[in-house]
Image (cartoon, rainbow, N blue to C red):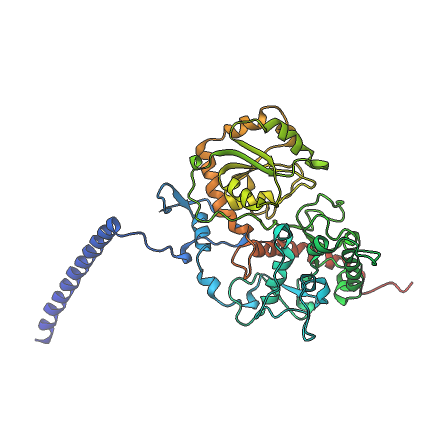
Length: 478
């Protein structure tokens, strides 16, 4: 009896289960179809986005998600860029020093080399300001464009704070033997900008005196002796900074704006890092402009009469000054110059970046912050992070010899279609965060991008240091 009663119950249970499963599937399909046609897009899940590591910044696959204006499909890397404008889950986590990309030993140098140049006075307990309470401000105006020394030093000082949140690409260590590189916290650009004039009764400038003291200081350090400075990082972003000491420190890695005033053995692209200027005009926030919203076709405002490679500015001025829809004028930071430049770039389709006294200028990074497509006329220019960024996707490059041909430049610019300009404009909005300096630093901003560029040099540094030690341990007795 038990066997006969069990079979019908099992049959009914299986039949009921099958019917329930079919009904559930039908309900799920109905909900998907219904909500897919009526519900708004769900928030983007950052865990599903492509990896944004420095070695794979650009991802070109398309996915079917539209931006706020609904007029184009966003690329995966565009979505990542949008997410960077919001607090990210990984940025809210505390920095884990054990997971940093590389380790940095920073000399506790006297304040006269760094924050003392900003007027900060040490209290005798530490050579560093308490960045928990008050951070000494950096001077504004054109001083800011070469302020990388300030932002990198602050980032290292904060890298071991117990409440540090956000990225920790580079982390400071107390034992130099654990470090991949040694950081020299000399604010050389600020030293040049503020203290390069001789103040009587002194015989040399404070800037030159500090460079002489720096060379002596480094030569006395054990870390320097171990590597002959090959694993040391020197910040020399202003083209005239470190003018008196650079040939004594040529083994070091320099962080520079360009190589315009360096001889090749002292500075070159193989051992050194090119860093962006800090833009001085206002970032174009919430930019929804279109091709037609920007009435000026081509914009340049700045010093026109320059020396060396910058002589091309004068030639272009005479070629372009009477062209329709072109603004080519002298300008400076005085008399509200920065605000005027901001308005001009924000309302222009293309912005000229012409070589000056040196191959680079801050104008390129002002254009990027304005989403004004840069037109680069500088044959010797080196660009930040070009090993991971393809500038041809958001810049127009013109050789100097072509640019000065009558009619060539304007024919080229006028021949760029509305669609091509819009594509480049969108790309500028995507990459702009890579050139943004700030404290606290954020993921893949200019500070983190510089550290990532340094990290990519570390294997080559390690190779050079190891090769230099081949015969150091066992020396001949003869």
